[in-house]
Image 1 (cartoon, rainbow, N blue to C red):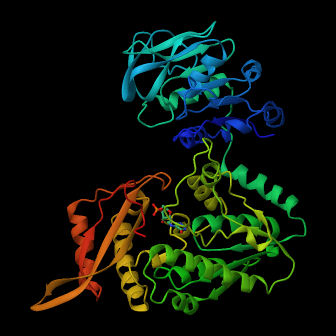
Image 2 (image 1 turned 120 degrees about the vertical axis):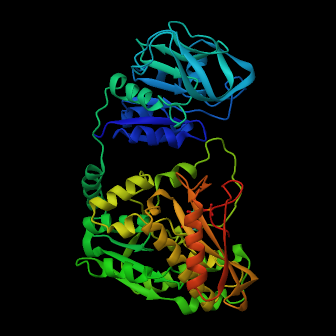
Image 3 (image 1 turned 60 degrees about the vertical axis):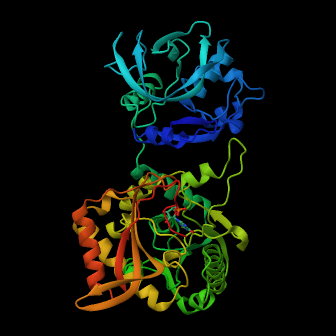
Length: 516
Ligand code: XMP
């Protein structure tokens, strides 16, 4: 059985980063909400280590989230981070206090003793910078615990009971700002939990093809293939497991980028043993979008039309029991609100690769334990072309949400041309892979310009480029001036209909990545 580390989530913003840092060591881990983490879970899953996450909540407040006290005495190594350290302390008899003023951000700490999770350069009396964000602190250590590090304010920031293999950190080793964070996680995984660096996508592929074969004996599966990396990888994996019993449907809604449809066709059509059909529904989509300018209305209409089209062609095929989706692990983690707080709807997301469950089909989501970069590696294992595999994310509603105002054929054409020039330049200048997502947006404003000796009165195009880890937060990419100038000149000179280019310097939050 696969050895796993379990990360118990108490609602920290950075729980996923803990998972990422464990997986980056080729150790398999899963994130489990604290209220699902029971003795029964431990018995069934047999984790070799437990990491308790941070939390926006406080153990000093009544009804604070916790886990069964017996879990601390099972002999399974435990690492508590921030709230996790306070929880360990409170469960084992220590005392927690509110600190006056928060310890926040980059903070200096000093090592006062050795511990098996201390990196090799953490000698006694040395100082190190770590990233902290807390308002509570451990006032009295639990019995038989030592503190191996303290902050400048004399707060305990590292505690340990080596015999019980229980450790606590007041700071966050999972964020990159804690320079030695990775070494601490490695010490915990390899020296305390005795994990081995064994988990990789080759293994994942083999094990999951076997699992899918077992689960889907004689079953027929349908998959909405958008050509994005997630649905493409899910389809390839399922194809390896069940061959032609998988039917992939590519719906061309007429809102794709230049050359996109052809590229997807070329890749999937020429695969033997792969049932791929493509439906041209562009006329229908343009019809429903006529006159629509409101972003939410666009999104909803496209979502609805897509399901209608998909449903219609799926109905032609008999005996389909399963719907395959390219759902990723972050979607699974985020859809369970650990703190119970509902999140506001910012945009109605529609994913062409991921259809709603209302079609009376059972779901199969073979990527729902993977992060995006892992899916890209798996794509390589499955022979997905680099062009599709390393593509920037593309939203389900396509160019419709990058044309502000009404979507028309001529505006789509203008945007397609500008976007192609921009993306080609990014690739040529070797910037494409440094950027998480880049695209052009066509604005519903015209401005005056001069070309040759003539006055022009044409559209404005905004260019967007962001860096991000998961699309939840993002920062604009700091292009140098020469590059911006090149993009602007190329677009204005080559695209009829655009006479001004602007660069979007908004981060997320407060902006979102897409403009609609
Ligand atoms: P926002 O604009 O919300 O976008 O900051 C975050 C990421 O999600 C993508 N996006 C979508 N993806 N269906 C999708 O499959 C959608 O409806 C959708 N809307 C936004 C966006 O491109 C970015 O990568």
